[in-house]
Length: 193
Image 1 (cartoon, rainbow, N blue to C red):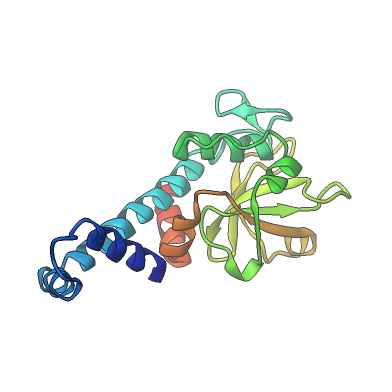
Image 2: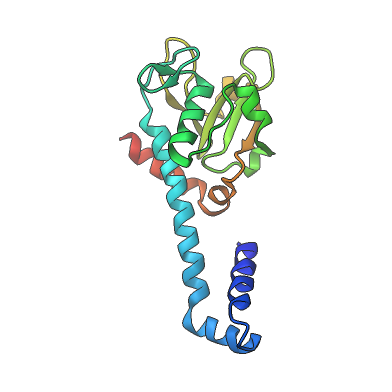
């Protein structure tokens, strides 16, 4: 948020070369423009995170299909993640889970925010399964053959013992820095009802 404030100040001061910096700052603060600018940016980011979680939750119940990339025919784990990001943000991620891990920014588990990717070692190899973190220690994914897209806790013994890392999709940093985990999970819970 500090970077955003600094960028807003720089941009606004650059466009007001005719006024002294202190005059422009006083005017800017008196008019409340920085608060409204930050609030507007924050609202856009919250909307994007809400849209991402809503899109993912909208796929609950879609059957798993190995190699599947659509709600009509079914999803595998990476097909589900790819379709969610493409539909919501227009970002086309690689097709395979391991390639999605390689194309995204590594973050620690403590940094997880709604919309981040979570990876698991389910086939005795790193990054063999992927899902989307929705908040409150939960993620949504297409689990396995015979199952359907669903939300699960990362804290259960199966998933916690296989957790393989967290990643952030480039360009989605704003989602992670503005929306709170609880807010996104509340949104996700409402969509599922």
